[in-house]
Length: 386
Ligand code: PHB
Image (cartoon, rainbow, N blue to C red):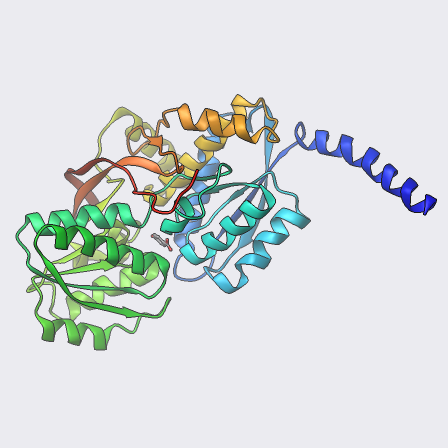
C-alpha cells in the first residue's frame, strides 16, 4: 500500500514539470490528412498552405518551434478513431489538424471533445462538427457542407431552373451538400426530382449518367472532389450531357482539378468561398508566395491550410504559447478577424467561418469569380449548444 502511494506521488511530482515543459518546448502539430486515395492532392495542398504560413512566421508560433507528426488517414473513417488516438495518446500532440473527409473529421471531433485536445478542421464540411458536436476547443478554417450548397441552390432558382437532379457520393458531406442545395432551390420555387448517389470513393458513373439523361432535368447539382471530381466532369461531357443539361456544383468540383479536367470543365458554374481571380492585394501576395515555394498554383485547400495555421497562431500568441489556457485561446480566436486570402472573415459562435460565397465560372485553367453569390453567409449551426 505504502509502496503504491509512494510511486503515485513520485509519478505526480515527475508529471508536473513534464506538463510545463510541454508548453515551452516544441509545439507538436498532429497533421491527420489523406496522402493516398481520391483526396490525396487535397491533403498535400492543406499541408503546403499550413507550412507556408508557419514559414512566414519564421518557423515559430507563440514563441515555440513547430514539430509535425503526420498520419495518412486514407480518407477512411473506419481507421480514424485509432489514428487520432495515436496522435493524442502516443504522440501527445498539442493540436490536431484534420481532415479532408467528413467521416474522418467527425471521429477526430469526438476524440478531441472527449480528451479536450485542440482541433482545427482545415477542410471537412460535416455540418455536425460546428453543429451538435461543436465545442470550445474545436475550430474550422474551411466551410460547412451547407454553405456553398445553399448558395448554389439560390443561384439555380434565380436562373429560373425548375427541375433538378442531384448526384454525389453517399456519405455525410455529399448528403448534406445535396440537402442544402434542395433547401434553397425549393425555397426559390424549384424542385429536386431525384437524388442519385454511389458509395465513396466509387467512380462508376455510367448507369447514373444514363438515368440523368432519361430524367431530363433543367440542371444537375453535384458534390464531388479530388480524383472523383476529375472523372465525373470528364464522364459527364463524354456522355454528351454537358451540351444539354447545365452541371452546377459546390466548387470542389473544379478546384485543384482543372489541369486534369481540361476542356471538359470549361464554362462550369460552381459556388465556393474562394476563386482564382479575386485580385486583392492579400490574395495576390499569398498566391505569389505559394507559387514560389511549391511551383504550383494554390487552390481552396491550400487557403484552408494556411488559415488553419493562422487560427493556431492567433490563439497561441494570445496565450504566449501556453496551450493549457484553452478558454483564453478560444476568446482570442473568437474576437479576431482572420486575414484570409479568400477575404477577411470571423468565426461564428460555433467556430465556423462566416464568409462570402463566390459564384465562379471555369475559364481555361481558372475558376474565375463572377459575383458574390451570398455575402457573409453564416452556417445555421443547427444543434450547436455553446
Ligand atoms: C468532406 O468530406 O467534407 C469533403 C471532402 C472533399 C472536399 C470537400 C468536403 O473537397
